Length: 141
Image (cartoon, rainbow, N blue to C red; front, side):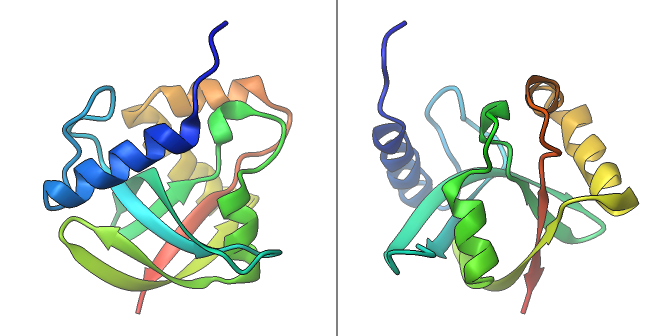
């Protein structure tokens, strides 16, 4: 299987997002609901930006810590647990948010189902792993 550099892909998506006022035009992400999550390394203190799919229910934005169904949570998730006060680029705007992780319960299940119904790859990610994939609410300030 050929290796690919996720960092390189992320940089291309970030540049495309910013060049097109918050819309991604490159495949396979073209037209998808993408936010740019700013986060600070829990161990390093390094500022980072990660493009992520998002969903919205009743005006509440949320992202999924799926890491494509791998056994561990993504680094950005650990960074948000350590530093929940952050910003996202949402369309052409930068918005201050507070991240809240949902790791169990009815609300987490309802939101996960909502995104998986729209983007079936999230249902597949949950099937691939034994961990319950967290949902992260992004509370606008």
